[in-house]
Length: 290
Image (cartoon, rainbow, N blue to C red):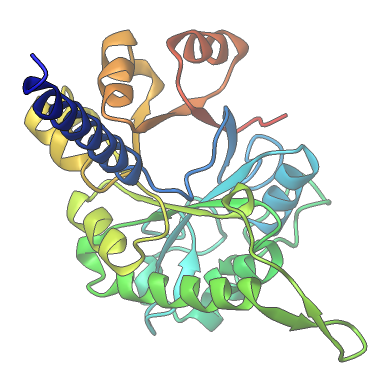
């Protein structure tokens, strides 16, 4: 019996090391910058209270205490990043035509406010830089890349802008008197998540910005996801984002079992909000934050 004791001890040590390795792999599979807790994402800003994707909507979301603002980016005619949801300007401005028929300067000159309200009548279409300048490091941003297949290279452009603002926020900046003041590292509670319906685009962003959590948006035509597809998506996406109408306990559990999170969209009433909380989702996108 005494001769067996060393072998027994080494087997126990081996099993302990194996368990530690597995735990390490499990933890490393989660992006450390993924924010915790139940999160409120203001859909195109607080778009239930102000014109969508405008400074008024984003500032209202900030006032209401939203964790994140959600907004859409695509490319203008001169390949600049612009914040607008539709592929045309017809619905949200007084103009008509495709977004990519106009330069950024032309788009920025278009009114995006409502004529019914004097308070927001002068709101304009924003550039991606406008939003980053105003909100980077102050409120979380969920950035949706629109129509990626129509805009080859849009992921690189988004990544380039994000890198520049991350560098600025993680180092120093000048105060109003020209003196350098330390910023410290910005936690992802006021950070960035990038999402897309295009799984290839989501994977590309993950490769370009491995420290930024990415989200795979699930279109109803892709539902239900096979286990194989879900395994592939969760190999790089920190979030699997679903329309609330398709979500049930089984889907939420399958995503959580893979150590990933679920954001439900678009919540418009208290009943749907309570149902999502009972399902255990990790956040909701809503037009009416607060």
